[in-house]
Length: 385
Ligand SMILES: Cc1cc2nc3c(=O)[nH]c(=O)nc-3n(C[C@H](O)[C@H](O)[C@H](O)COP(=O)(O)O)c2cc1C
Image (tube, rainbow, N blue to C red; front, top):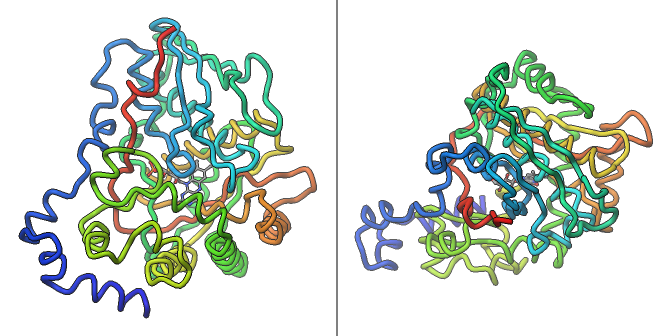
């Protein structure tokens, strides 16, 4: 109800117009952060050499809070070293950099799929100088090598790389996820992981409730919530200046910001309408989950986290192929103290033994399409040796 009232005030015709001093049509038409979306159009066409060509797809991989933590050192046209940019971690919500490593696993999988598409085999040597323990360090995440291989069979999943999105809209409560769709998503994950999912019944209800409460726990934890608020990019100018983080774009949100109804201070303040608006949206995301899929590993070694990321990338492409939408809801899997009860419940519900670790939990369903998320151009993410 509160959300509807908020939107009603915001949407009242003429309000945005008055705030901007220009016609509503012109305002709406000019709000797209075109520059921040350019990497989606440039993938596969900006670079001729196979390494940068494949990397231009890899930067479109899903990753936590869109931090894009990858930094690639080019050794030659066929060899590169992937490192984590240690300035792009999420210490409050990801204290052991587990989710960051999963995002790097997504990057590696998309890189490999793109290489196959270009007629190359990608050899990936993970943690060649040893795997970091509690926190990441400067050691490489992976050494990447491409070899021309006429026998490589491109994976049909790759066809969905440019259309894949994280979709945070409400999902359609009238359209169940079929057993066939669920099993296609479960089947595609690849080696080194355990996958499961649900599309009906008491477990679906429990996971809706668990993800909703865990998200509320995060909203009400000042340090964790502040980490997200600090990464919010509000409106075209901010998004184009920093095409990463949490993207609050589009004419409505930018209009609200011009009206003084959405700012980082308000989003951080539990007493504000903007904060409650965010909370209502998050509730709706959990409440409209029409299914969940999760990826677990035996143990929680760094290479298991990378494998989970590779599996999530494949699942996300299969979701796109099935015409479905997907959004990770990660709060209950996070390791900071306030999440402990949710973490315990998630592991009680979703694992079969004490050594199993849930690495990804995502809702699925049918939903209206969303725009691509901003990306830094590949040129800003590579260094030459
Ligand atoms: C490990 C991991 C955890 C994530 N957790 C969440 C989450 O809890 N909520 C959410 O809305 N998106 C989550 N995402 C999705 C990212 O926010 C998303 O990939 C990023 O913003 C880029 O957008 P895109 O996937 O549409 O390209 C997660 C992604 C990864 C890889």
